[in-house]
Length: 556
Image (cartoon, rainbow, N blue to C red):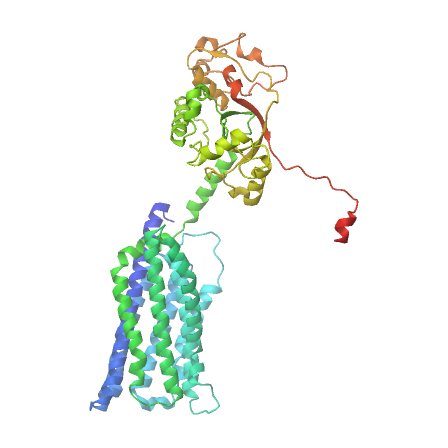
C-alpha cells in the first residue's frame, strides 16, 4: 500500500483517467448515432442495396468496435493497480467487455446477412452479453468481503454508476430481444411497455437532480469548485434525461403505430446527437476544474481518518480538570488564569472590546517561554455584541437568555458567562457534544456554577515575591509546575525554590498547606483573591422517585 500522500496523488490521476474514459465513450456513441442517422437518411436516395443494407451496417458499428478495443486497454490499467481498487475489478471489467464485444459482432452479422436470421435468433445473439454480465455480477457481489478498509476515490462512484447502467442495459436488451422475436404475437406487450427500463432510469435521474439542486445553491457561497462540479452534473443529467425521454418516446410511439417511415429513426436520434455533442464539448472545456472537484468530493483514506480520530480522542482525554476557582474579568467572562493587569480599572474598561482582550490573553499566555501550557479555546473575550448584554447582566443581575434568574453559570473552556445554570445545562443537554457557546460558538466542555460568598480552600492564595512572579504563578496555576520547583532547580537536583529566586511569605512553600491538603493543588498570589470566585461543576439535580400515585395526573 502506498503512503497516504502518494495514494492521494494516484487517485487524483485516476480521476483524470476516468473522466477521459467518459469523454471517449461519449465520442464513440456520438459517432455511432451520427452514422446510424446517415444510414437511415440515405435510404431515400438511389444507393445500391449492398451499400445501404450491408456495408453501411458495418460502418455504423465501427466506432463501437474501436471503443471495445480501448476498453481492453483499460483492463491492463486496472490489473496493474489492482491493490488500490476493489477485488477482481480488472477481471470483472474484462468479462463484461468480452461479452459486449461478442454481442456486437453477432448483432452485426444478424443485420448484415439476413439469411442467417432463421437460425441465429436474437435470443442467441444476446446470450454472450448475458453470460458476461452474470460473471461480472458474481465476481463483484458473491466473493469474500475485504477484511480491511482501503482508500477510495472516484472509482467507487464510477463503479456504482456503471453497475446501474449495465443492469438497465442488460434488462433492456433482454426485453427488446423478446419483443422482436414475438412481434407477430398480437397478445404481447407494446413497445412502450418494452422500454420500461428507460422509464425507471428517467425516474431515478429526476430524483438525483432534484436532490442536487439545493446542494448546488448552498455551495455557491462556500465552495466554487463544488459549485462547478454540481452545476455540471445537474445540467448534463438534465440533458440526458430530456434527450432519452424524447428519443425513446418517439421511437416507442412510432413502433406501436406500425409507422414504417424512414424518418422515424432519424427523429429519434437527433436529441442524442445534440446531447452527446454538447456533453463532449462542455466536459472537455471544464476538465481542469472538474478533476480536482471530483477528487475532493469522493476521495477518502481510512488511514488519515484513523489518525484524525486518534488525535481527537487524545485531545478529549487531555481536557483540563474542573477548576476550584475562576477569576472574574468582565460580567460575562471568567478565566482560569489570573493576571495582575486584568484588575486595573483602566484595563477593566478596555476589556469590554474583543480586540484588546485577545491581545491581553495572548500576551499573558506567552510569558512562560518554553513551557507547554493549556489555553482557553476562545481567544476573544466578548463578541461584537458582548458589551450590550454584559451591561444588562451587570446592572440587572439577570440571565441574558431567560431574563428571570441570577446569572450563576459559566461555560468552559471559553469562559463566557451571563447565563443561569439551568439555561447553560439545557444548552448542553439539547446539543450534547455539539453544544456551542451562544457568544463565541466555541464547543462547551462543561458548565460550572458560581458560588458567590463561598470560602476559598485553605492555602489557595499566597504572596509571591521575586523575579518572574507573574509568569511563575501562571505556570503553577495551570499545573505545569505543581510541586513548586522551578525547571532550573529540578535540573540541578535541588529541593528548595529559594535558591532560584522563589521566596514565599512564611518560609518554604511546603509549610503553607494545611494538614491533609494535596500538595499538587493550585496556588495563586494574594492579589488574585479580590477577583476570584469559587466554582463547582453544575449538574442537573435528579428528582427523587416516589411510589405514590398522583391522582390528578392519573385522571388526566
